[in-house]
Image 1 (cartoon, rainbow, N blue to C red):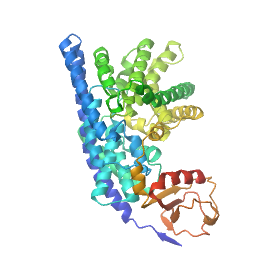
Image 2: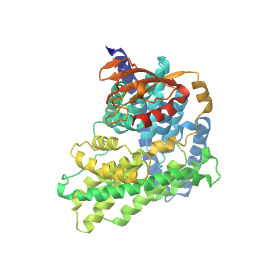
Image 3: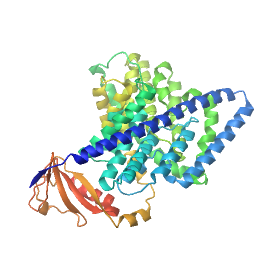
Image 4: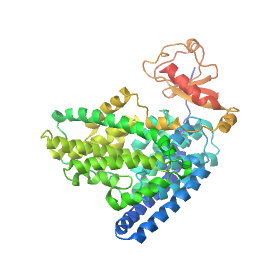
Length: 509
């Protein structure tokens, strides 16, 4: 039996996504503007401090005070630590519950004062968590629960990334590919509505110029694509190194015996000598990406810049301060691309005119392999540089880098970070009293494709309540045949949702 799906829910959630996107755009634009202006102030202060001992001491006192202030925020709300993306993933998976208002204001303030002094942290992860908090707040105000609540949280996360990078399509793709892991029409339509409305606010505030306006002169000839294979392998190897080192940082910080919430004092103190020595190279790194081609052909300078950015990025993020790794990853990828281009130029194997191209390509490849989200990487870099001319080389290098990390058993970095979160047992006990909705998609070639429902060994703890096939909804029966493209809608115990989802994915895929 088939019935046509009503559009009321889709329209309702789309309007909700627009509202969430507007508030997310305002919040993230203020967050982005504050960080940029605070960074400019600190860069000037670091330059002035080179010949002023009193100013050096004043900066140290100020940054220690900032570290203590943020430590109090972290102690009262540990879930504002880091980028916030793993926490959002856990929340959407049903493994964690967050206090949206506490997250919203503490992440906003803590993020500004942590990133603004010049630490090598990105604004995009916090922007995603800010948007998710707004989506959660809206769902509580409108009394939405279950799947609709999660869709609104996901739409807020999408709007956060869209406003942070002026990249609405990539924002939608990132949430679908990396955060929510669900391509339900309700999810992507609501997320896109949020991304577009949020991005409109950001464009009004910051203008139409691409975030990474990297100039380039020529498209790369097909005969030079062999460089993409070599560079992709290099990116994959360095990407796996990035994953290993980043995931090892909490253990390294534990050696200091400094309480976790106070470990941010280390990068905040170290940023003073770093800022005094290299004021133009501090911060998230988007300015560095734009100016890389102006640094000349000195491999010593470029490799030194890579080591500085790599090491201090680890120190900054490993401390647990509110801040992301999204932009720092793109920055490191860009530097790797510049190092490769200059090296090949010095060997007479590639004209230096293609340095900009390789900078752009390497950004996508590095993020694709570390985050294991190649589609997001391709679309994100395309939107950020404001050009569609690089799609083919972006796809080639992202694929190669992704495969290298996959062969080295690298997991998606945000998924790996999520696994290290402390899941609240009180939340799971409370959730065990309720049922929740879980959607699973059946892909082409799935083991259950063509099978009768009665013959599939589904877990005993689930109830299949509907099957969506295109725009139609099917009421499932024992003799219903599963087809590729079906979306199975099940009801599960809320506390077991994440576990059952993993079991179903193994069964279906």
